[in-house]
Structures are given as structure tokens and as C-alpha cells.
Figure 1 (cartoon, one colour):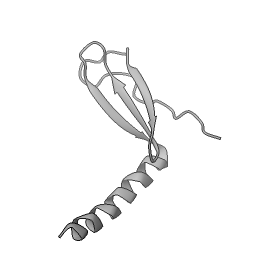
Figure 2: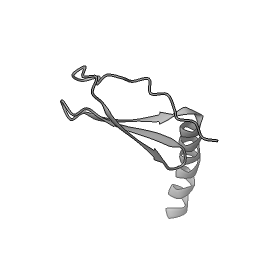
Figure 3: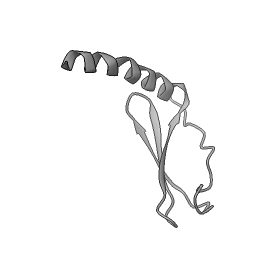
Figure 4: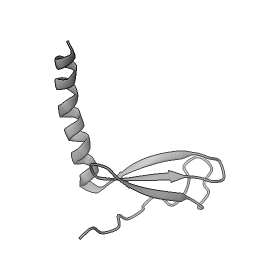
Length: 70
């Protein structure tokens, strides 16, 4: 069962606004997309260990892709 990740960032780091729009994307883990409607600052945040595992898979895959192209 999937549980909703906790959203620890409640304010924009640029302007300090607490009105933050968020969206969740599931692609090799959960990524939170956030946007501040006040200053239009946008950022992403990997939620939990699934995001870390996806980044590790990407790091392992990149050297092989470079070597195969040469």
C-alpha cells in the first residue's frame, strides 16, 4: 500500500510564502513538484528512499551508456 509522503517544506525558500502548489509524479519513485504562485519559484523534491534508489540506478546506467556510444 502506498502512503502519501510527508511534505516537510511548507514555505517558499525565495519569498517565504506559505501558499505552495504541489503535484506528485511517480516515475521510478515519487517526485514532488512544487511551485510558489507568489514569486513563480519552482522546485522538485524526491520523496523517500524510492527517489534515492532511482538516482542510484541512473548513476550506474550513465557510464555504460557513454562507453557504448564510443
